[in-house]
Image 1 (tube, rainbow, N blue to C red):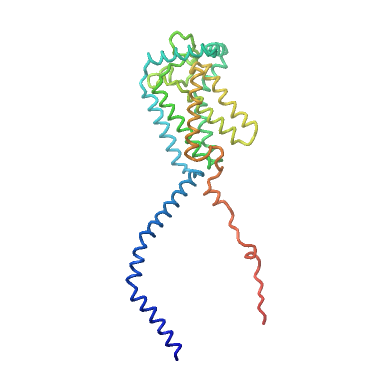
Image 2 (image 1 turned 180 degrees about the horizontal axis):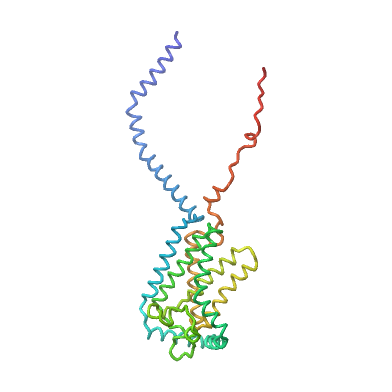
Length: 322
């Protein structure tokens, strides 16, 4: 009978401890709440930080409707800002003469010779005029679509490079108005669009009054075409497609010079803007664009098959004996 008594005493002692020290326990718990809350907040903050870091290292593919709206609105803003830049003709002509003299000093002032030689071949210069007016948009949009479908993990970072490059170009259009060679006073260049009656140049003919004719530095034809060419070269599987990727910006350079729309130095400016765009994406996503995973981590995890232990798939064998 004594043992139950001891148990009762123990229970009573524990109960007394609970009742007698209850206020102290509550106070201790209350005193511990701030630390616990702080630890929980720190845990949530760390989890959020890790999540943001993972998303930056493996950005998810955006929804198609959002992306179409973003690209459309962005290009509209780009066009409005580009054409709203004051057309300072005197300053633009001064800059053009300065660029032309610099190229003469460097021994690379060959634009006028290339322009006159290409203009002498009617079918060639006509094709270049249409190349300049159309492929700049068609191929860029095509590469964006290809990246979105086939390389969704790299799409957002690659698109960021293009956006940053274009944004820096807008600063260049404002800070350094430049007359293209075909509009340079006394340059002796041929405006091939007007000469051959082709369409597509917003800075020639009836469209000239709604377009900034002196937004030539940097050349976004080179910036965008090099962006396309690098994406194709690094990500395409077939060797001949990768070769075409490298040829595209080279052909674009020949076209912009032959049609007298840009100087060589404008192309250099476009490449510099693109390099800054890649550096910005490298800082933002913690890696170079083409080294990011092809498929975002979230989509890759969703595509992985669910595996179970092998013994789960084996028929159960009863070992019970009757």
